[in-house]
Image 1 (spheres, rainbow over the protein chains, first blue to last red):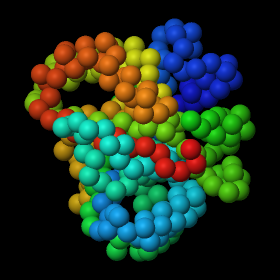
Image 2 (image 1 turned 135 degrees about the horizontal axis):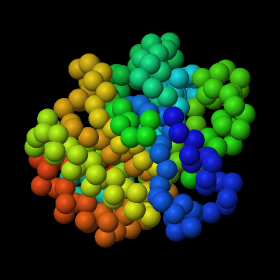
Image 3 (image 1 turned 30 degrees about the vertical axis):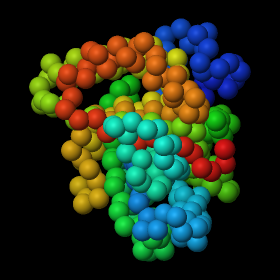
Length: 136
Length: 136
């Protein structure tokens, strides 16, 4: 886990895009060595009640989980390129301190409750799990 | 952009997994509203010289880019489940302040140099671009 971001950016009140922010690199490592990236295709992505039900179930779960480190909950940005898949309905990009934390997350009752509540709404779910390989 | 993580975790010297870290939620938003998640399949994932060439080219690029906000560079965690795709060679999970920053990143000379150097090494690249939908 890296807190590099916290040591550099906010306290100095500088933009991360400023060449003066850091003479060696302009970027910071994400917090959490384990990335769990989930893409979900709803059966009915245009049905407002399904989206509302999914989003509220998801947020109850995310806010209650004790193992997740950072979250990014999104929808396709519609960047139109051949190599970009914009067909999913929701992305859920989570980081964890390490693999053990993600293993515990899989077993959390709030996680199982979310799946029980919401899995009927999706037709496909695709996950990529990645472990950080630099500067652990 | 959220610096919630920086306000809470490191200064108080508490674990993010501690129930006392935050009475409302245990997780924090990732920095950057735009997530650019790239999965790369090398032609020869078991050839050490190809991996070294790819990794050094990638790191030169990442360290020189002025638009990336956070990075997570990884390999498959080999979590063995039907819904998990472990077939890729490298993941490159980047966040940006917003879509405009990602658009600028696409045009950075160091980005184009990385593609010129390394695209011959990969047989497939797949990207998901996601815009944050909560608490912007």
